[in-house]
Image (cartoon, rainbow, N blue to C red; front, side):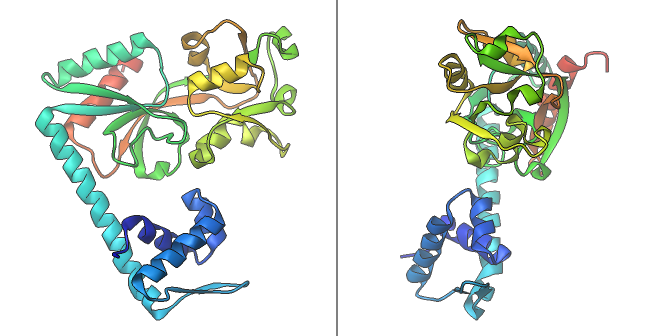
Amino acid sequence: MDANLRLLRYFVAVAEELNFTRAAEQLYISQPALSKQIRQLERELGIELLRRNSREVKLTAAGEALLPLAQGLIQDWQFTLLTLREVAARETQTLRVGFICRIGSEFTKSILSRFQTLQPGWKVAIRFFEFSDPTAGLLSGNTDVALLRLPVPKQEKLFTKILWVEPRWVALSSEHPLAQHEVLQIADLVNEPFITVPAEAGIWRDHWLAKNERDGHPIVFGTEVNNTNEAMEAVINGQGIALVSETTTQVYALSGQTFRPVQDVSPSMLAVAWRRDSSNSVVEDFVQACLDVSQPSR
């Protein structure tokens, strides 16, 4: 059986790190699962690629030879996928725009209207993604441009333009004792269970858990959710609290929950983002439409 790209990606991660723990963290899988995948690759090839013991991981001669070849194959396939998707998009004149959650219907409508002026004849396909992909399909090549809440994993691979900076609030059950306060501090919240997003969200997950503002105080994890609707339901059901953008307090206002400003947490930054390796005139015009709407005086 031929080795597939997924197994090669696992091998490359371990070969670059020479450490199964760090490679597993990078891939967002468990270390035992990663070890199993590497063994499967070695079985399929019939070749030992790595030698490991309790102290170190080393590449065999075959592993050293495979590493640059595997890196090249992965890069070539990623480039092929991006090229095919861009060709298909141009043929249908469809720009794929990714979102994690709603940002306000009037704001979105204004952007789309402005984009139509800049690129008449082009359609926009809006795609919503779950919290496990904070880049809203950009890194996977499933979208051409996206509206994101920064920071996101592997942000260095993206161009970003900040559109809107706004305070972060906390969403609480209306029955929660802290709902009686008009304004809260992070010290009021650190002992509360926080509704969390999947671990693969990486730095984006840390941001919404206020990891940098806790002064080392451990996180109390509540239930895990995949999207904003699930998060709001979990808040109403008393399964935890959640930091949200100020916009969310308007877009997702529901009976049974209360929003309160949190004074000493960093703000939320809404940005338009696109891949550094796939800029084109259509994407650039969408970015311009976003800037025109968010910063009309510029």
